[in-house]
Length: 153
Image 1 (spheres, rainbow, N blue to C red):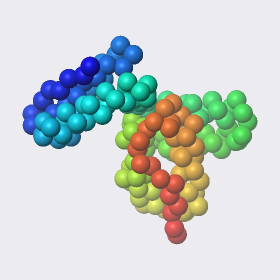
Image 2: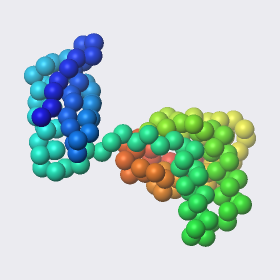
Image 3: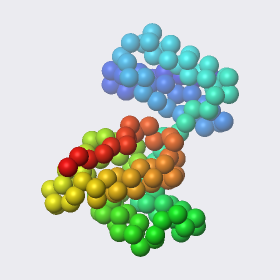
């Protein structure tokens, strides 16, 4: 059984899954709509559908994981990958994975272009970023909208 409560004008719902309280904004100030969303969420839990927890992993953890992945599987030259990750580390250090979205990636591209870097170099770094997001903690749960982007010269 769940409940509704208000924070300002917005209704929030609280449900329990596996004994743990999960709270989420309904994004609406309409109580009837909030009730409908609560019933929908309760139905998901009753059916045994897992409700993903928000990912709290940061870029730092993901970068470390990718270095470990490359070391374990030998799929990349560690020195070369280390240089690429170091560049990404300087830009994304301390940022939550969920905050690495299309705008953040565009900001990175603009910064690297401003440094006079070639499009090919930036694309290789973006491929490393993509691999990090795919292989890192909670990679499939980020919901960050990051896209595979190519930079044109």
